[in-house]
Length: 238
Image 1 (cartoon, one colour):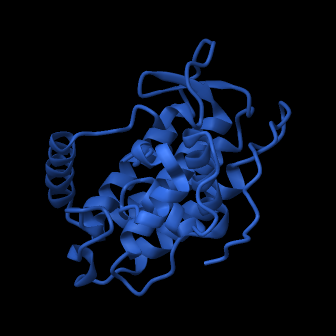
Image 2: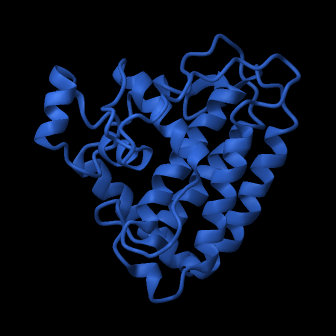
């Protein structure tokens, strides 16, 4: 770990007509995840992941669904004002154990019927490529609809980066494979710190921040001492 690591700075608001500030991060996140899914062996596709109870097949289908969410949203203009952003989007994401079990069951059935990871990796690569093209054709301040909310293009792309980076970490938790890139991980940390309203502990690198911030790793006693009362708010989203 690097105790004196620099803090991720807030992203500047891009001007209308500019490329979304987070789009390069999404290119990295999607490219790395497509490469990872494309290289998993048949034996690896049913291994445990960092998302308890989920296999790489389950997460592959889940990530394909999220890429489809992004593609649909980029073609769903919405009247303003925005009612959420890249940070607030995650505040309501605190599923119960029953919600998790139901989501996993539905995901596994769909993934299995589709044919497993072999039949998921191609559509995932195609869909994420389409998301990136579509994201480059809209203005960053345009308002879009997704999951009953209205948000800007840049904020939508941030949610896609965070989802991809966190689940990339899940996929490699028990595999000797490269994790997500530094840029997407820094975006995860930025969102987590904004949700918390204060910096995360200095001793946490960005991988630790992502895992502990989302409840994939338990807080230590030292963490709780550093966080104080804020420790009771963990996980910041699930």
